[in-house]
Length: 158
Image 1 (cartoon, helix red, strand yellow):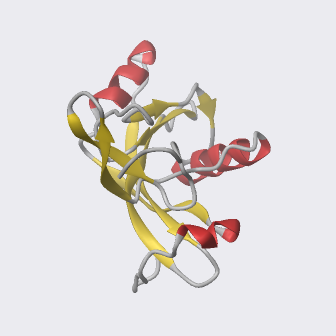
Image 2 (cartoon, helix red, strand yellow):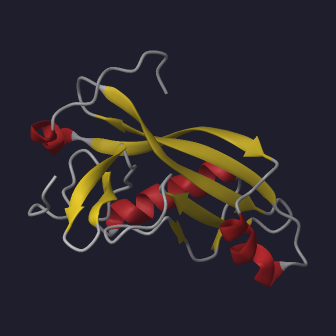
């Protein structure tokens, strides 16, 4: 990710906007969701990695609250990837999503495979940019994710 981060663009600039992963690094403390997803292959040893998600358009880049975790087995190449939103689950979005098993040559390769698969399926990688309060008729207000370039519920009252 670049050293300087510009302010987030308006949603009007969403045409050329995309979310990317960057800075793959090893981690010691994988999330419980990733560990649970890897448990069915407990006879293999896994290494854990994290990659942050950031947004970009032709003029700006900005951080998000979201990240990807990779569980990768050097011996077999088996992997699973966990997307973490960076916030608790909401009506619009779960707090995490786990991929099915794949096979790769390293953590960057696994993320490239995920990126390509998502492009082929027409599903963009997303990152939660901020949390915004939205009107909830029963309880007053609740937190909702805001992802620049993607509107979950255009009718929500802010």
